[in-house]
Amino acid sequence: MNIYGFDISRRFIKVWRRNLAVYQQTWKISFLPPLLEPLFYLLAFGIGFSTMIDGVQYQGLELSYRQFLAPALISVAIMYNAFFETSYNSFVRMYYQKTFDAMLATPLNLAEIITGEVAWAATKSLLASSLMLIVITLFGLIDYPSGLLVLPLALLGGLGFATIGMLFTALVPNIETFNVPIFLFVTPMFLFSGTFFPLQNLPGWAQGLAMCLPLTHVVQMVRAATLGHFTSGLWFSLFYLLVFAAIIFPVAVARMHRRLIQ
Amino acid sequence: MPILEVRELAKTFNDLQAVDGISFQVNKGECFGLLGPNGAGKTTTIRMLYGFTPPSGGQLRIFGEELPERLRQVKYRMGICQQEDNLDPDLTVLDNLLVFSRYFDLPNREALERARQLLNFFGLESRSQAKIQPLSGGMKRRLVLARSLINQPELLILDEPTTGLDPQSRHQVWDRLEVLKKQGLTILLTTHYMEEAASLCDRLLIMDHGRILVEGPPAELIRTHVGRDILEIRDPSPMVRDFLRDREVVYEDFGHRLQVYSMAGNDLLLRLSRDFSAAGLSLRPATLEDVFLRLTGRELRE
Image (cartoon, rainbow over all chains, first blue to last red; front, side):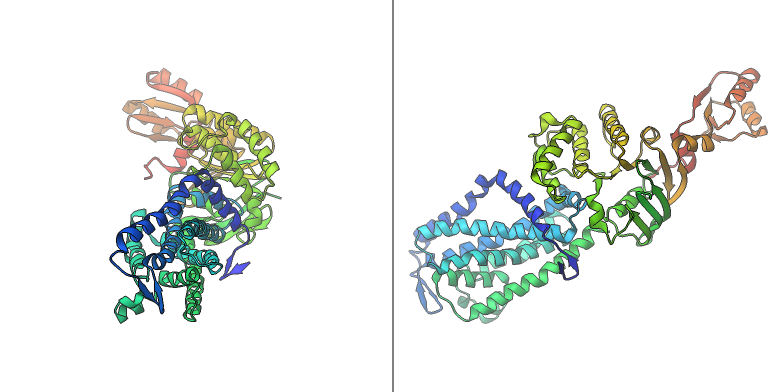
């Protein structure tokens, strides 16, 4: 298949399977954070924090703070799992382990390697959010069946964050430089994407800025799914994420080409 | 039909002409060596052969297929052993081979059988479940070799296969390559070890500054460029120097030592030891290293 001038065949699945094989060795440890994290957050905010706030007004709904927070926790996990996989982990494979070089000596091409890495990162988002969904369901904070939409959303959001992580991997001169996108991009998103408080609490200009961030749109859609409350604005969020991934992906592949094939 | 055909191949990096229009070919069943000092363009040349570096000019054909257009098809039939050790540290020894076999579309059962054969061949069968990190340098190198053979390639490309190994490991690798050669595998290798090139290669070329200096079978290169023997004269007296200057002999002067590329070394040795003194004279067989240093010079390449 030819995508933006890159020849990408189904062989990318072999790269995905390589990462799965490594993951299977450590899955017991990898499963812990997505199981424990929502537990800790919901307990901390449920017990310690919610005595200070009555609830949250969200799109005309009266929500408990935990109801409001739970989908944000999933969204943040979608972001972290995909972004850190294609940033730090891919960088280690590319730069230190020379795994990409070894793969390039086989019938795989670079575009397929990048596609496999991105697909794997999105898979990690899916795995993490599935586990979190189970834990949060036990707290009675997920509306079903609409809650199941979290899974395809995890894949879509995962793809978006994976492509941007891969773009940074293609650009950074060394692994320390990831601190720059993390402090300028990831951390602000973690805090200001309607995660811990509604966007409406921000001044107008800041709301506009927040609407430019991909996490804002993931949060809105995941929250709609867990609450079973859908509005027409979600179509824009869906469109935004699709376009975001569709633009960043070929840029990441092209920059990776420039970095490795010379 | 040659397995590999390179014609007027060139590569320019910004201002640097790394490879400057080289041509050579490798025939089936042959072991061919690329020699040259650091920065001569060897690694750039083989990187172009497996698509890591797009050529700036020239033609490249492997198995009669045009590159880079048919790179993928060619890679199915080629084994590549890169200079850096790039085994997968996240996987065991056996899994390194099995995961790699998938990239070549090998069916699982065949891959397992092939992996076990290769681990046996390279003396790694007892380590199949080990992680990569605790392996010795020699073992890692053998595993990289094993991995590059997983697809039963018709052409094996080796970029400095024994650099950094201790003598035992190096000889073990040579021994295995010798066996593969006997089985009819076509091999292209770069190396800094002249001994390795002289014993493994049927033909080789020496390149420098991106160009080919000489090409031919190692024994023939030694004969034509430095002769059979080399006469070394330690701390030569001015008389000896005058004597040599008056004669038609080719020699290099290193100050405290002269090296005479005498095509009739025995006669000269007799004359010198009779007319002057035998002290400091020694006659030794010429080696590929003499050819290499003679052609590429003695200044350091850093």
